Amino acid sequence: MYGSERAGDDAERTAFRKSEKKYKLYYENNPKSSKKKKQPKQVDLSEVLDFKFISELFNQKGELPPGVVHVNCGFDGSVFGLENRPGFYFIPGAVTLDEQCKWIRESLTNFPQPPNRTNHNVIYGPISNLFSAAKEGKIFVEEERSNNDLDSDSSGSVSNGDCGRWTFHEEDIARSRGKTCKLVPASVLLRKLRWSTLGLQFNWSNRNYDVSLPHKKIPDALCQLAKRMAAPAMPVGEEFLPEAAIVNYFGSGDTLGGHLDDMEADWSKPIVSMSFGCKAIFLLGGKSREDEPLAMFLRSGDVVLMAGEARECFHGVPRIFTDEEKAEITPLESQFSDEDDRCFLDYIRTSRININIRQVY
Ligand SMILES: O=C(O)CCC(=O)C(=O)O
Ligand SMILES: [Fe+2]
Image (cartoon, rainbow, N blue to C red; front, side):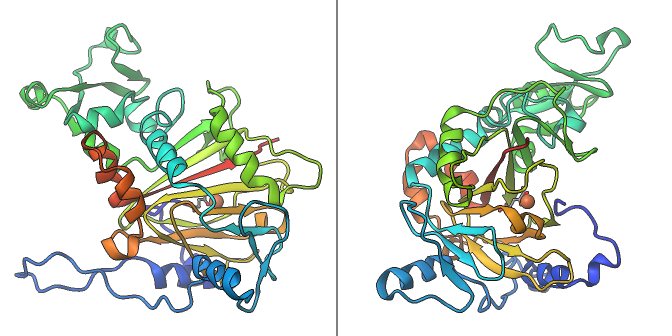
């Protein structure tokens, strides 16, 4: 479902796919000799629902656009729904700026730490301290393997079955070994980090939760936040129990293809999906890929809930906006203005992070 995967021919022609193509990032064809930075092609955003604007209009005048409803549920802040998508909730600006910063930091430092798995696991095995290695300009080096090296872990380096042993090194040491070993800068690996999983670990090959994989509980503060956010979509008298979370990382041009999240047992429980960093377009389709999806903006701090019938709706993220004006992260940038936070600032200026939290059983 990630951007690099190819959809089949039939999938190419669905209403959902057409919408994905409409909003996807394309560049203008600059003449080859031009030294100018690549310019993104302009896209018509007039049909994209903007819940920030909807919320402002509702608070000022009590007005709502056709098809949008205000949900009266005692939540501290406005909650909106869609007439023809029961179980879908949008809470604009639900997460405070302080909390946004906290979860951005956690998503980059602690969440990708073993035993949590990331997309890098299959190639490199578990990687510890990727963010600090990137910050320090380190290089990941594959050591030459001898037979008795395999699966030994005494040096603190990583070994994972068929993967070699990879270790972070200072640049000069790494380059001196570069003639015989594979090298990957930590900054490249950080850029290519696409997901990490918290709590019960999701196995992407079998598309199920693998309870036999080692895991840590989701941090308590994140559970508390998710419980509070889930409330508008919860059956009366029940409490949301966060058991697993997927953290998605998007750089410029990255997409999340249309999909359903159907591996959880009880679809009456919501998926709590929180957005951080650059603004994105979210597509909410229907139960078939043939149904015309609705496009909406997701900004840093927005929360989306998908419960009940909305759990059966295709959805995805065809676009994030990384240009200064459209990313809408000025308040976040000022929070990361300290010199020590430079690396967070650099990352988030061109990235989006989504944390979606699930009750599995
Ligand atoms: O990034 C988003 O807003 C959506 C993420 C999502 O749908 C998922 O991880 O299943
Ligand atoms: Fe999803």
